[in-house]
Image (cartoon, rainbow, N blue to C red; front, side, top):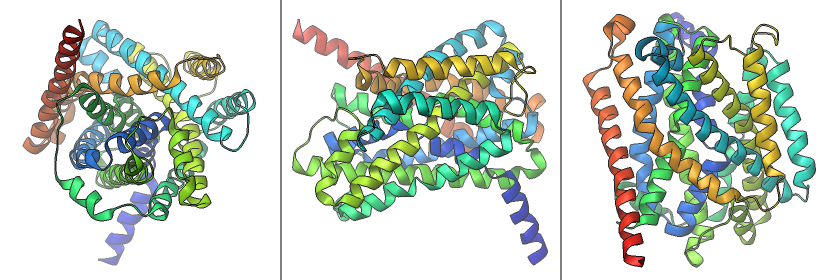
Length: 415
């Protein structure tokens, strides 16, 4: 019994990385702004979304991890092989557009978080962009993964700051299990954004590529699945504490919109210096962490989809397209932040909504692929997984159509 447990533990330690990293990067600067905005404007009301979001996150991440372990191929690689280059190209183009806005959002998070410590963005952004580039381009997969795993642990700062503020825990718990939907444009916009930032399309592509590059196979998959589930639960626990913190610090004193995630940190100041500093440090960690992963996810997707060599373990001369595209995304993503009067907040929120709109299309391809017995053999989806995945597709399309309908109605009323 003990020998079997020890073997399982050693295998779990060997496969740990892709699931935890992917799920935690989900709480990036755009995600933190979206959660903070939800708490500041609607208080504890949006908390009910986290339970269904967690279930959907576990199902989608588990499917990608399983496909990577069984087929040994990335998601965009499988889409290209099974659905053709044209489909892959259009899907990749949409992903690159969405991901680029997310990359800009990460450098915006770096700038605003360090400005709280009186460091100019004209210093912080170029230095952090150089560090992001050096870490990925000059590191190996193993060394980069170790740095990312350390960054995962630093998300505990949001949990601590939540306790330091002392929110209304009874109201928070009740709101978590009592769904309330308001049929107005901003609320539905926020719901789509919450799903889009919690289950972003890029995550599916990055996780599957990371599983493949780490060399996880079907033999280690039971332990890999456990890591994925743990990572998904942790990321939404962190999201819970961000919403709760902003509900207690901002909404309780009057609902309002916030300009950026730094506003949320500043609102915590009256509750103690430690709560403020921890939230600010968490914002920097999340932004820097995601500024490494988002460009990496994008280049994995493009290179796999178009058949170019890719991987952090490869040298620059072995995968030139992979590294040059990564470099361009980092340089332009950071450079835009230095452009005066750029509408960062609007673009950050919009990027999360774009994620939510794009997600159903990615899910459709994922479910079709994972149910192909020729590819997955005995590892195809169970009925439960298919019900959750297809239901999510229908719900997200429904939310998007509802948002369009309400927006058109508002425009006609205004006219």
